[in-house]
Image (spheres, rainbow, N blue to C red):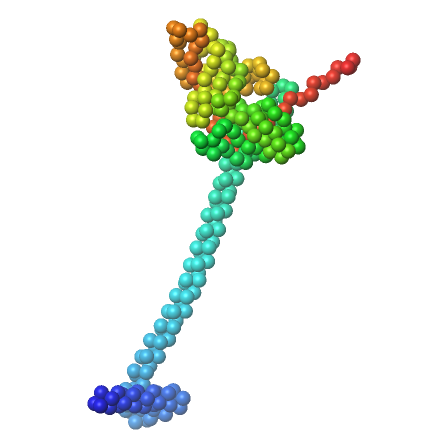
Length: 278
């Protein structure tokens, strides 16, 4: 009962205080009375209310400020994400431009024309059956089987299967690939054979007494009728001479990076020009 009485008294006092404070805000009678009498009674009454009002106004202003600051931060974060995306897009365009410029500097051999193609799929890891890539040009664009495919670094492979709008390219690293090559410096001839994904190439049927040096570039010899003559293919990485074989054991590494292929060039033989009597 005593606590209830105290609570009632406090509520009544708070009600009376708020009534006086609100009445004075509307009429100003307490301020006038204090001014004429020189008493500080109204100041004692109004000072707590003014303090509470100031705190409430300050809290509201800080809240509004913080809300505005959060909105500004959200906008800045969004701008930051947008700028990062634009920066990545511009960087990728710059890299693509560099790659395309390197491809455009490639001069096709005499009697051959070239056309760019984009790599749209790679073999799926070391478990793939064949070392291949898929390009976005097919028979509808004049591509046929055994069409040579190159990049800025050298020979990539040849078309194994040509669809209407895409083609499968067999890479020189595949175990079914064979390319006739000669040494760029010493002109030693052999057959470059693929050994599978992630392994060095092998040069077969190169004579035991052939002049060949580690690091020498191997280029296409033009034999076989698939690749034009003189295209760089691989670099000699190791040479072994055996007492029981008539041929050198030669290892080579491809000049092209199959995993990094994004654009390639497809070479097509130009039709032979007919003479006046044809």
